[in-house]
Amino acid sequence: MSVELEIYINNIVKFFTKNPKDLSNLVPLEKKEEFFSKIRETASLNVEKGDEPALTKKQFIEVCVEINGKNPELDIKKNPIVLTKWGEY
Image (cartoon, rainbow, N blue to C red; front, top):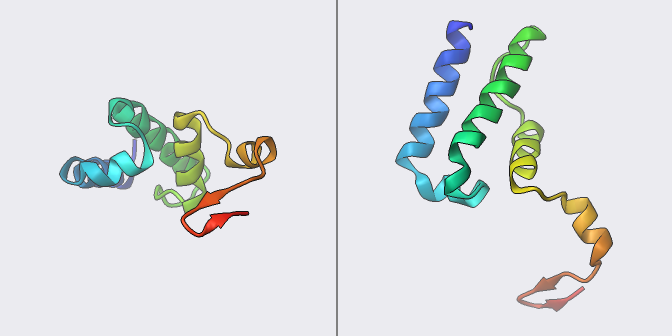
């Protein structure tokens, strides 16, 4: 593992340890170890490709969707009605 990768992962873990509410907005707290593992896996793939270890916004979303077991696009296709505080659309 590269030093950059370890620093990146340690910073992610440190941030979410200090800010559990932010983590709970992304994934259930009982799945935090799985979340960190997926982040490490994706960051490692980035390094293997010669990129920076930091995940892109899209990669972060993909990790969260995978852990939560939801695909927003499929959810919209199943139920195209979206409820908001202003009404349905």
